Length: 403
Length: 119
Image 1 (cartoon, each protein chain N blue to C red):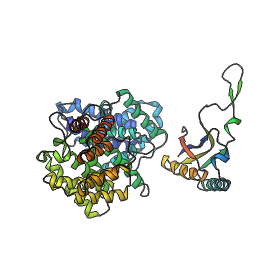
Image 2 (spheres, rainbow over the protein chains, first blue to last red):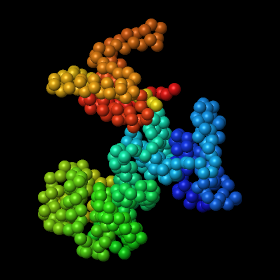
Image 3 (cartoon, rainbow over the protein chains, first blue to last red):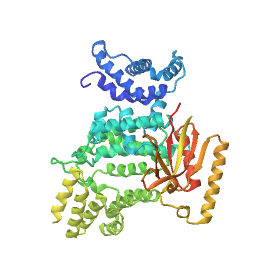
Image 4 (tube, rainbow over the protein chains, first blue to last red):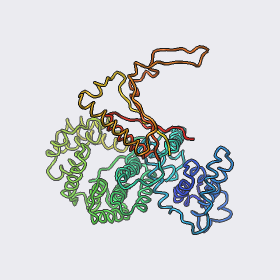
């Protein structure tokens, strides 16, 4: 599809077309296949006939016709064919239909249903809502294409067989279910921001896709502060992308980054969202993490960082989510406010033996305290566990410095 | 509407005493399960339900050959076996999961939810 007028439209419209068809026919398989066929038709016709004035509308109508054709062809789906005819009968203009917005939100909640395995939730979301092809989704998570195709097919089959509802959860279920959706999007982002596998230091494509999904969700649920918080967190993290790796592909820590390389537009947008969250005053996990990143991106130099503010935010985060990982990140701020000794006292008790950032943080605190031998051992342990090449390269260099 | 099998799973060797070490707790769980059964009868979700004797009372019959072959069961060697089940009718999986959560709480066991073939 490269270099065709369809490509731009594809990413923007695929999820909408699938959502619209899924809403109409209640069959994700049919929706996906028909959407795909409509895009193939567009690739064939648009270069010669020109892009229609309303490409999204053209694609939706074409996909719907493809779906009806397919239902007519398949005699085993006779019952559903009749159902589809019934559903599409009031096709006069002005007939009340659910808005595309609602359809996409329903699709997102269906893809992220907790009855599906987390990796299936991610795969379905990227495929059906993000419009990534199966090979692209497979490539994103470094599994063979066949495995990914099976994963997606099985998930769709389970949705159909188990009758997983195609709807936005009711109010009392919404907070828990929304957390699941946010987790899926953030998982895509973190896999791009600091890939755990695959040999890349950063995966720009996954960061961009997660932010795109975050924007879609934000558009669909403008009043949910955690949605704004997640989008802000991703923007403020991603804004630093160009400054995060040196020429050799090694990770550069926040205090040493060239801040002129940061993306001002993303930072401004992130800060606007954080301010909006503050006004709403319904803090949550992603909002607090976004606020921490806002403090960092607000500082002209590393020395200007308001660490007292960062620590206060982590105190609040820890009060809400008292996990060892939050305690570890809080300790990093504590080291700046009260010194590495105090931070080490907190870090040493944490049950995070198998978590490489724990050893990397300990190593850094020990290094700053001049305890080189212990620092070297901790860097060694972090290197045993870390898989990201940019991070490994950074850790190896630090280890050499203290050895 | 879809019908679902809600099955309760226990350790193969677990006796009622293992599952409910406290006899009062056992009585309470039986009472809670009975109450749950009543509730889903009234709400129209109930299709069928039953508690099973322990897996070592099971017998396996293979009638696929010329003569039926009978062996001491259970069929599955797995460490966990079904201890009881409900068959319920629900609007969708979310409703079935909510029923399963209540059933699980009542009987003090984990519940697997599995859809029946429709039509």
